[in-house]
Amino acid sequence: MIKDAIIIEQPYSGQYTERIYNIESPWNSSEWTWIKFDDDNEVWCGEFRGVARDVVISEKNNSVFILTTDYLYVLSCETGAIEAYETKPQYNSMTITPRGDILVSDDYSISIITQTLDVIKDVELPFELDMIRFCGWAGDKLTINCYKFLEWENEMKLIADWKWNEGTDSYEISWSVS
Image (tube, rainbow, N blue to C red; front, side, top):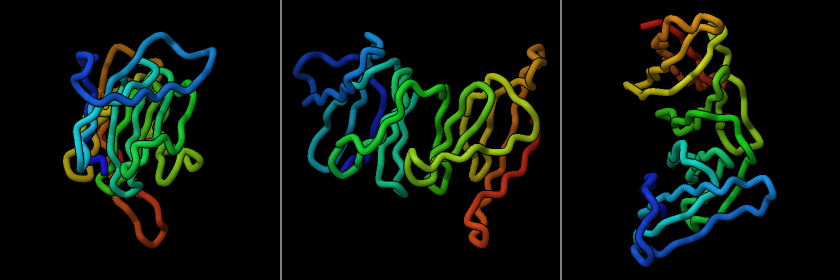
């Protein structure tokens, strides 16, 4: 079972057992990303199409999410096999909520993946944003660097407080500017 996954530089030949995750497509880039995995039995390396953006493990979904410029891959933590993928995602940033859901953002929007890539919901933002980048969590609060749309002279830190509501089976998000 995969317990840890980190983006690394191309390893030396033979340094790790390697698995190549190559989805055949004429639109693939010539770039590759290497992810080092640590599971119950060994440390090994996966090779993925595209330039690395991020990798997170969701214990809730028992999956590893790998974001590159070419694909958003979802691997099984049990087997390391591809469970799903999205081709040419527009996402620039990815993070995981304290509850284990995946957040992805392009420059203008944030979406949440609660189960599979078939169930992606847009998050309602407090106003139009541009150049959204996730910076990190402090408890249930996510810091986001961004700009108000068409106001590029002032970068801002937006704080999103994510509270899970069991009654509605959804998040309640309150926003503030830091």
